[in-house]
Length: 81
Image (cartoon, rainbow, N blue to C red):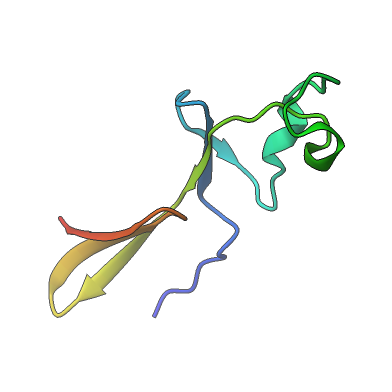
């Protein structure tokens, strides 16, 4: 069995921009500007909302079939290759 660090190999996207490599832990909000007009006010740290996505691929070998398992917070999928 090959061991890899769970924190390696992550990618991040903000508002459907192209994914870029990041080192986790990663704070998605750090690249945003603060504003007193933010809808959430102090409860949101004065940040405007955005769509943040993280992804990581986990290569697997199962019964001589290769598969790639990808997890994100919205859904889980397994796609044979």
